[in-house]
Amino acid sequence: MTLARPLPASRDPLDRWRREFPIVALTRYLISNSLGAMPRRVREDLAAYAEAWATRGVRAWGEGWWTMALDTGDLVGRIVGAPPGSVTMHQNVTLASALIASCFDFRRGRNKVVMVDMEFPSLLYLYHRLRSQGADVVVVPSADGVSIPMDRLLEAIDSRTALVPVSHVLFRSSWVLDAEAVVRRAHAVGARVALDVFQSAGTLSVDLEALGVDFAVGGCLKWLCGGPGAGFLYVRPDLRGELKPRITGWQAHEAPFAFEPGPIRFRSDGMRFLTGTPNIPALHACRAGLEIVRKAGARAIRAKSERQTARLVALADREGWRVSAPRDPGRRGGTVAIDVPHGEAVAAELNARDVVVDWRPRAGVRFSPHFYTRDSELDAAVGEMREILETRAYVRHVAARREVT
Image (cartoon, rainbow, N blue to C red; front, side, top):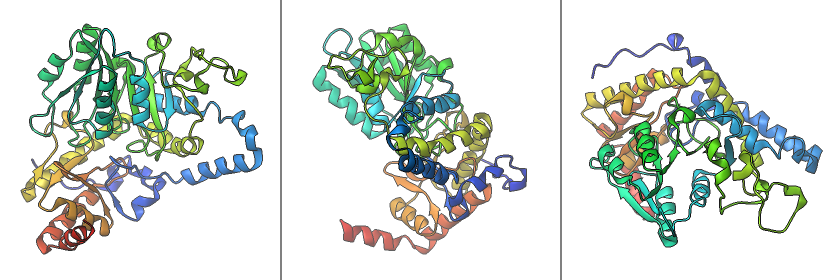
């Protein structure tokens, strides 16, 4: 792969957003797949939350807090192609996924759940536990540790399948799933699809309504630059009335302030899928990132991501390092994992030098540029990794890890 000259910041239309993210002036921040950079405005938004609590007290609930889980969901919806009222905010993807699973009865009729072995472990743990409720959980393995054989995945989805929870982009390898093919196959046999867009929303163009998925889960933590505690759930509006989640709470009640004893009478709108008290501080913190990502534009962000991940692949190839990511840019998300000797220790040394990355087993050192990243930072980061390997500067981290274990 040919390595072009770095694009000057003056020619990058997205470079103007760098000033909104303080950490990029302090580090080479290449870990947006794990935690997106914090927008400068978040301090003001959290201060506004504190001021409301301090001066308005309980009245703040009626002055915006009560509907924030739905209002903030609409901000997410504008990015992921979901209609108003179809996205609600939750603490994390695991809980949002558990809420989806609670809509199904796996003890009768359809009881098959089809997954892939490259899912984030938290979801594998969750769905494996459904076996105790009668679910037949079928896990399709990866053959190469990067992709999933689509023919085997589609073949596993049959007339016994109730739910197909799959990631749009695999966290470990950044491989992009053919979500359209999965939805088409699942709907042909009467199954539902729950698409995890945690690693795609904010770095790929995502249109949930166009894809026709039944559910989607994700979070603001990563590419949406919204911080922890702000997961989200999309439910296709025409399905809303037929679903009765067993994980529920008073916000989902038709008349929550009547404080009636059970059973619940479900709301008919998007708040039907809420539970208890929402995470108000996290909802304040995530809004700035959502607004910036929307203004920057999904197409522009994706185009830059494709160019910069291609650059990382070319830089790794030049060094003779193995890349644990798809070669096809159309099948590659926003992360490139580079597998080098002593990768965990190398990542630790990079972080000590303010090159902020992470490492994952069976993948390597993960580099995740975003729309605020400059080409020159990628070149410099790979240069640092080469120097660390050549000088064996990683050795001190190997020794430190031995002392810990």
